[in-house]
Length: 231
Image 1 (spheres, rainbow, N blue to C red):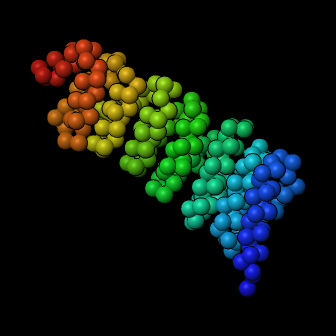
Image 2 (image 1 turned 90 degrees about the horizontal axis):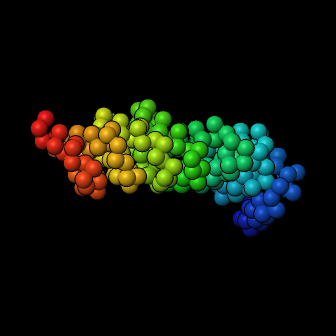
Image 3 (image 1 turned 30 degrees about the vertical axis):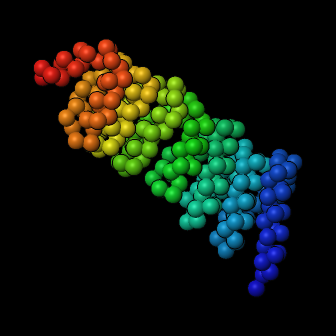
């Protein structure tokens, strides 16, 4: 059996390569091998994933290895891969990397890591998040996509129309309520948003969010309230 101390030393060596950064590019093949082999210790594989993102995020073969690792069965390996994929996207842009982060929203164990990474992308994450909110068949993905747009703040105003549609028409009361909460945070006071809030009044699981959003808008919401009362 391998000496546990030896495994710790090897992990420390992997971490040291990552700290060196781009100058450690000769170690990339070794790190990819560690990351891709399931028989290696999980901590070492995770360290390899982190190191690859620091050394060569622009390299196609590194991106390929990280994309594969983002679907690994071990949480630590997936999370390291997702965080390094963020570096890949920030370094060179990668539709595949963004898609992997969106896909990670489906796994409750990965949701926070993926959402935090998408927030770091700022404006670049608005469109894929809006698409996930509008089209994904998984309620949890739509819910998290809406919430992540809220965490983005001002850039998410670009997705106001998508949020308004979700607030009015999504099949999940939770998603509708979350979309309303985000619209209220963004101070959306256009007709589509206000109509969506008004449409949620009296709907179980939605009404409280609708009332809060309309209250936050105050006088801007009065026409919509009148319309709702006379409908």
